[in-house]
Amino acid sequence: MASDDEKQIVENWYASYDDEIAMSEFSESGKEEAVKAEMENAILAKRENFSNTKISLFKHYYKYAAILALIIPALFFGRKFLKPSSDFKKAVENEVFSVIETKNGEYKKVILADQSVIQMSPRTKLRIPGKYVMNASGEPAYSDRSIFLDEGEAFFEVTKDAKHPFVVHTKQIKTHVLGTKFAVSTQPAAITEVSVSEGKVEVSDSKTVFDRLLPGKRLRYNSKTNNWKTSDFATREHNGWFEQVTDLDHASFTELAKVMRVNYGVILRGNKRHTDGYLYNLQIRSARSLDQTMKIICSVHQNKYRRIGNEVVIY
Image (cartoon, rainbow, N blue to C red):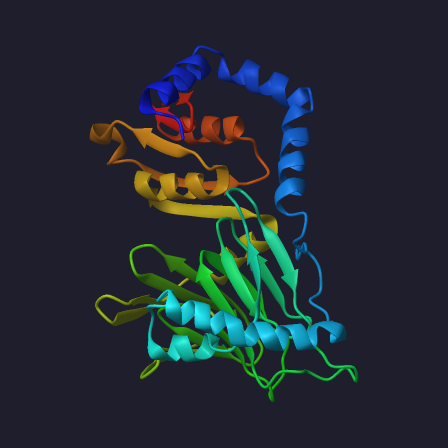
């Protein structure tokens, strides 16, 4: 709600401090964690924490889920909330979902009822249908295993079950598997990417099967042009999902800036005359502090950096 002038006053105040000293004092005092915890508790007081937990069966809430299943689609259609293909619309009709999201710099691991595992990157949103549970006898209570990736990036380790296919839906495409390890990434420029490190997956839209990917294959699909391309990649890249590491191989400054925005929530800027020609071969580890990571980045091309508010400027 602040005006531009008020925002500038705050930015000028912040810029007058030495970042390293100010931030270290803030961190050492424990205030940062206390404030974060207080905010989280207030916001998430009535939401279930799905991180590192199993989604289990709640028998007593079935009747309420049935009521919600009738109400929610009406809200969706009334507000014209869904604009993707008809196939995607049909897949979410009459469903109640558990919504799981990650923030900047936050990674999350989700274990599903069938012991399939999802590793979520920062700024990712998943929806898991309420029917994705096990019944009282320990058998699946679902006909297929559908997961909805609304935005972001996730890695999937799918428990094999020939009777219940595992399907990841995005707004553009769907990825169909029985048991495998693969990653799905959605990007703002209408691009969806699927990469496979184990098993076999089928990638399609509502009308066409694009390809059946084997380990070491990656498919990129552009929903604006309806074009797709399959290429090779090193399956070891998927190891980063467990180590929270991003490998940059001849990455441009723009690509580096995207990774920094996701992992640290900062805007990376530079002098375009110089940075447009920069390439980076390095690892971004989320366990490192922003200061440690920036020193490594600057060492590549002998740069310096300064932080002003939410921006980090390389010069």
